[in-house]
Image (cartoon, rainbow, N blue to C red; front, side, top):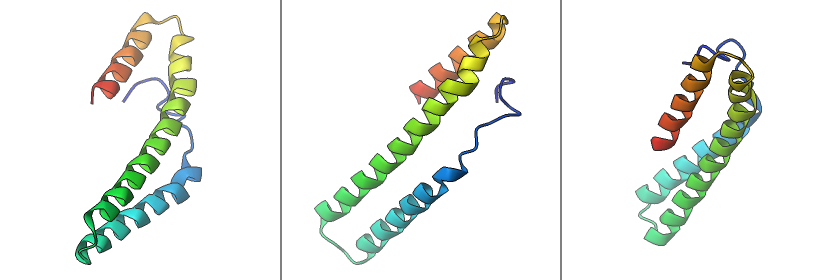
Length: 94
């Protein structure tokens, strides 16, 4: 974990209902598989889950960029800036 922002992470509690909906969608997909539903129906639900996850991921990334990354780049410490660049590079390579 970066030394920058470790004591002031943004509060993402407002996104818990969205994560709960995603969890419900996953449970629905499991039931569809158990019920041997038509393949395209299952695939469509999986696409919806992926889209919902990507949406939350985008919100978290934007928040991280606007808080921790901006704070790191507002410092004069070049090591902190390099650390943030490496962190983001590693994140996008995964």
